[in-house]
Image (cartoon, rainbow, N blue to C red; front, side, top):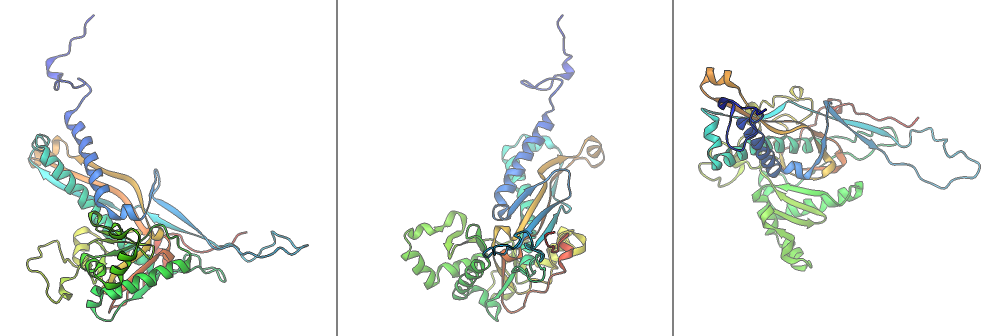
Length: 388
């Protein structure tokens, strides 16, 4: 017996009739484009630790202090330690609110029929989420640099974060010699703390990067190095391995009360910067609903706590990004179209970003010292305990 399919159920040539939805297939495809754009644009995802969780709202990171060592004395118990050696602590990084970007279209078919629009809209949706994730991540690294170690048991305290003052004037942030000295000092500090040489990075804005690579000391390092010009990677805007530190440029880290650059403190700022460059952290927080520390479960600092910040040097374990859901794309249904005459499309990401290992974070500042962060308890369940 032959089963005939009514013509009204036939979708389009090649489709799995009675089981295929052209619009749903497009949403899945668009979600993939959004995810790819997010992964490409989010620098923090490449430079920090990433964890993926299911059926949970937080990820716990454990810290272990240093164990004692020494010669065994004959006749004494090896397991007789009673001083909590080694000390143990933990840090929670919680899943925060959804990061979203959205746009409204009269008809989804318009987007489906124009490949160039598909790539443009998907890239902008993914890049918008990546922008906010980057900004929160670098703020979390700054918070790590201002904290003491989670391991604070008496006699077992581990090193915490570090802040390096590179000058007394805002313009000192663009002094190549001072930046070179900061890199040298940071490399020594991280080594003294026992931080791995693999995964160390520095974050500067473009003007600082240009001042750095034109400094005489750096020019000599390049000319004397076996790799020569191969040290510089123009395609990635990064400078490889200066005192075991990779230097990257980025405009999303806190810089003198703004993100990436502060035109108010430049002698000759450019004209017509537009609405998205040189924004204060406070105005961006208002638009992005990053209100206060209490509004989010993780600590990102207040908008007024970065007035003197001008750079970050850190190891990948300084902070972590915890994902509960990778970027995805959703659209409204026919009820919304009937009422509003179009469709709302939303790209969203469920994640949280928080400080993890303060010893791995160093913050540079000039004239305004970084403010003291809130207690570590706001970051999650932290503390110290000894072995029992």
